[in-house]
Image (cartoon, rainbow, N blue to C red):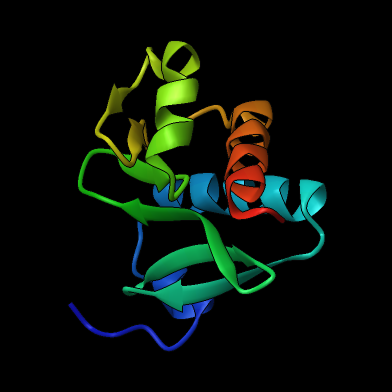
Length: 117
């Protein structure tokens, strides 16, 4: 896989559904966390607040992986994450996911609290 230089290159590498869903997720984050920044790290979009990672995302063949950078948040929100396949650090959503901005916001708030932000 090529190393992407910017978000436009990353999104151009994805099919329309994946790109559109990830853009909606980023829009929801930007709306609720205007102090957040997006950077490419590990060749995927990662969200930072005050220089700390608070959320990450990537596209796979048949799903999108979303990561709040916090095992504690994954545990705390286990009931709300129950509809999704999860690991200790991420949850998988369909490529055409109806973005749950409230869930993402709550996960990021939990990560911020964990970091003392």
